[in-house]
Length: 412
Image 1 (cartoon, rainbow, N blue to C red):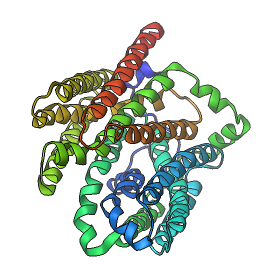
Image 2 (image 1 turned 180 degrees about the vertical axis):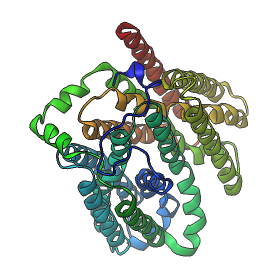
Image 3 (image 1 turned 60 degrees about the vertical axis):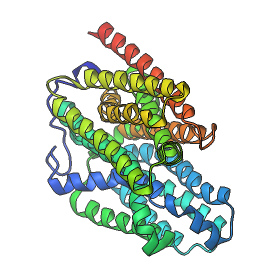
Image 4 (image 1 turned 90 degrees about the horizontal axis):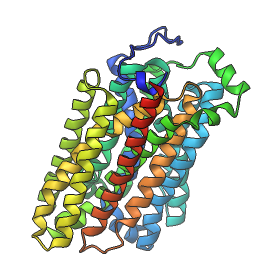
């Protein structure tokens, strides 16, 4: 399917083992939980880092490494499970990945040293990548056009909201269950997701399609070398990078600079998350009448303008509370970008959708890890690093969106 047709095409009547291209409400819930797995496992235990240092008799950097190790595992795992699923089908790799994710998650709750925790977390990230990469692939196996765009928008809403909500939820639960309890919650959610996957998600890739993928092992990589996939993958990655940079910097901006209490910070954080969720649901609703490409461009434009305003305020000497409004607008606007950029990237690939989803996820996690690390360079008393990173990410997204629009006009 060409990118130009993604906004108007009807859902394709793809042949699946289920005999249907639609998802039941329970199946959609399962896909949502698959999408939530990595963000929850990444961010839920962040508020307990100080306690982990004490319990494991280790340093702050070692505890932080448990998070970095998980992200590395998740990035590598995308490239393992995506291509594998193109060869053998989606269901087998997904069930294996989820099972290992739960096993390593439970084992992590019994870690007796930082080294043990780091090893288990990298293994959990590696296996958990199956849920992230295959949730997108299953959708594009069974849906296309407007139906796929709307479904992916909902999934990206959940993926985008999870990193914003998870630290707040973790902070509320930590006093009563501690970091081991939070890791157990992550494993428990994984177990529920595994059970629901067995019940609600049959194989979505027909045997004849798997045979074609295996017979042309390198054709999938060639299929990705088109401008439609590359431009929208970059847009998705830098937009996600802006989001993770914001999440990493938000405690210092809201609490250290602006002086909000922990409760006020949680409420403000939640308000931004609701703004992003609202824009994502709006994007899903307007995808048919406006089109995902136009909605994405509007979101990118709003985001980069808000980022510039944020940066100007950060350097101007104005009261830090003035940062709140452009930050809310900029983060909310990402709701118009993340789901639509995913749908446009996946729609531009005609074969090897598992590989395409894997590359998309790997680039996303790599850029997100980089921006979340860079945002701390200015220290906890500075807002300008976040402004510069968001502006740079927005500028790259603008350039890629213009290039994608130019390519669509040439193909029309």
